[in-house]
Image 1 (tube, rainbow, N blue to C red):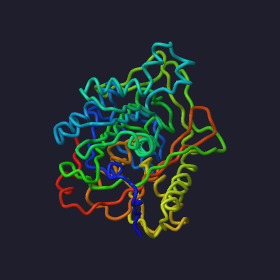
Image 2: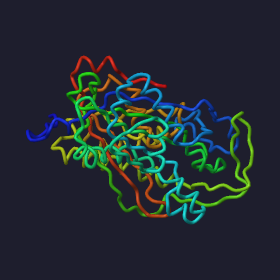
Image 3: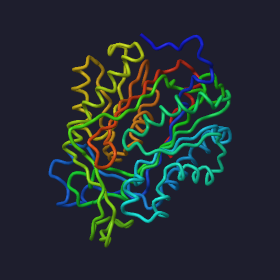
Image 4: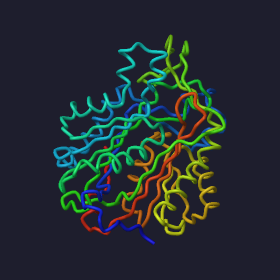
Length: 379
């Protein structure tokens, strides 16, 4: 059973993913760097062997992946009508007001970063949005595109909407934290969305639906604190200590127990809302938080009636890339996905709050010969 649009839906509201690009910073931190700081079974449970560390801003990372878009599809840049920047490594306002000066806290605003990105990339979109969303940010961004952008944007048949994820979590990481110090990797992705009738930039996967919400949890899994004498890596692969650093803390065991259920619940809700059965789904690409979490997610999905095994094992050379994990998973499986595709995500809620965010994206492959020529390309 395939999702069908209502007869009254205008063509400009039917959009899909034309291509996806990614950028991994050149500085790579292997597991050996952590020595005794890494939990004994970390690599076995997460599948992570290395992760990138960036020494440039989120805006700079985003501009690098936009350079790849400009090279491959200059029209997507020239005819960009809307842009959403997802920056899961920015410090939330409630934390910034507590630990930062007012001026410094303003620099952490995602929308401010999105405007800076447009200026740097010489983009002139009619609508610009910046969000955080942590590891659920990609689903949140797609929901914004469908529910807030497209209804008023009146996207032309040759225009694009860009969804950028730019993650520099290393700048807020306590590398001596045995649960989260080695978990995340810096990364950027760019998703080019176009109308389904765009002949020059034909989409490969139609974006049918996107959902994002927060649900109460039994405890807070995430918070920030100002720490002293914090160990951090140098660009040359050495070690140095910062006198003071604002870092996050993560209850890894707690979120590892909660996230699989949240992703399964989001997937089930997505199928229900779109009049689909679990058997109607051909592929599931969950948030790549680590191999063990995806395996547990697969068990919960099976209990919910889904029969296809979820895509897993994409964290080896990147780590958990937060909101960039779903577009990266799509890029790595480009052209191999057919039929209906679910991409469930889950993440921590606001700092210090007993909540979890969850969401899901529903895609459908399009039978267009021209789409296969555009594929996905890594920067």
